[in-house]
Image (cartoon, one colour):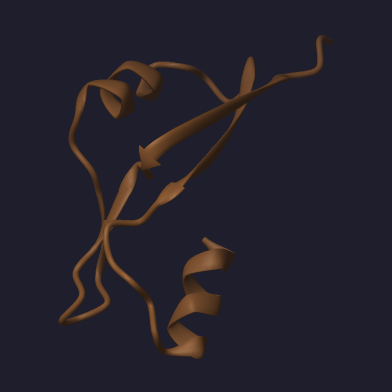
Length: 68
């Protein structure tokens, strides 16, 4: 069995967006997110580096976000 390859994506935005008012996290729409959605976890482990779209001032919310 072949090990999955790591795919590291560095983008100005993450594949999720945070609503600053509620702290709700939702999947972003966009070309890069849509293109990479088709990759399977068996072949690739996706790692994203980027900005979530809003500052997270509350340390507990920030920790929750990082755990996802």
